[in-house]
Length: 629
Image 1 (tube, one colour):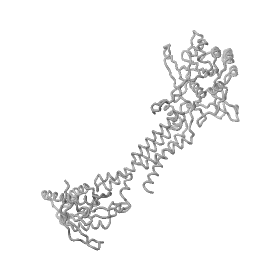
Image 2 (image 1 turned 60 degrees about the horizontal axis):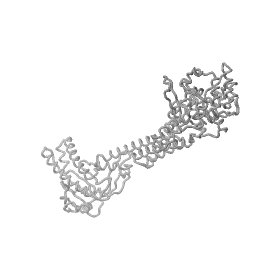
Image 3 (image 1 turned 120 degrees about the vertical axis):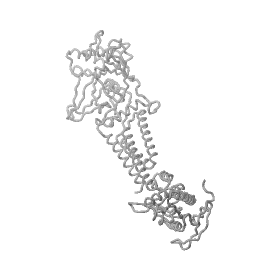
Image 4 (image 1 turned 180 degrees about the vertical axis):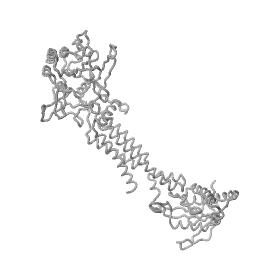
């Protein structure tokens, strides 16, 4: 498998790892890690809807418009405490108190009265139930009851008492689930199975019962989530201090329905009550803190009566949240991270990471926009989370891989070529591909140099002195090789082998090589004067230069390889430096033809080279025509 295919495979596998994490969290039970499962995704969508401006979504709907078919009678703080001046006791009221309220609603033209207050036990005073039942016969009323399921899966009901139940035109259950401690939805219609006490029966929520009575039609098919729940669209609840100014006395309102307190409704003239309730569903429920009737929603705690008001509004206006099917969510959780993995594999690490992060932002913006404008809930946090994990894993892999490649290149060339050459190699997406590791035929200029009389000189020096002087010499020569783009191939004892230029070739390679050699000879002469002044041994160096085609690449065993050049033209350069005397730079005719406009030479006797049938012409460089400044 080649490098590119291996990189792509690893990047895609890491992307699938991110997708797997997203699918696990997407599939986890709603009560487990609610902040990271589908409950958390629902909450994120609601928060995005409430803060659409942050996402730069123009003209975003708020879904908070008043519903012309809905009114509220609120058991607020004042009504809950009671008002003796109007004959209203403190809550809980005798049920007969609601009789005059229903009478007034009927006279004011209300269509349906809905109690978000449960009457589950007979009153201690039967006359109270009789008074309420009599009023219910005049004002079509929907009552609340409790619907539950036993551990054995059997349906259990807590219904209004016999004196009240038959007087109601309908009833509905008000019980709700709060998975992960959040109310996110409610089943509006429940049809029981073929067995049990309540077999083959249809039960509706309080909101659904009210709407069916109001419209005279049964609810059709509703868009629900996988658990059959109609998702709840959060509502903005506003609470402020009551005009009475009493401590703890608060009034709350919601924008979708106008409301008045129960005390006001009981005392207000019918003519003033009529504009509020005429032709509407009138929902009656508690908004006093003492009632503890709260529903925890994505927008914060709201009163239970407001929850039912919102559901009635959703059912009347058709404002439904449509949930994307599970297969689409899972497809996105898998597909989009894979696409990012592909981008991370094909692009440079920095570009790939930037593109991936931009893709995450674009997807988040898309998911939010489609929800804000169309209430279509496509998974956000698991898809975006999987994309981020794919970016993280893939990015780390590419960074570590590139770091390993950089280290490999630096280890191979860092001590042998100029930093500029190493930098140029590392610019490549795959630095190894720029090194021609399999061996490539290229035209280069090969340089050899050798110290004359080194063996005899070393006999009079200690090993420490030899190493110190050689290192000083090698350091100065290598700098001049690097200066002109050369690559130090190897040190062979006191011999230097360099190539101009590896791994990248230019038309100036031969000229750079001879100029470098000329400056090296000048530097050796200068260093020799300093060594003599210091009482050290001085020496001269013979140099050979040849230009021609060679094979360049990695050579060696699998456990140890060396980047080098091989071929006849390498042997020619080696022959020339052996011909050169101390202080001479001997170049081949091939090199001379490329540098004759920059060097002054003296032609020497042709020499035989192993593998050649005729002698080759050679020249000794005696100067530069235009020495570098």
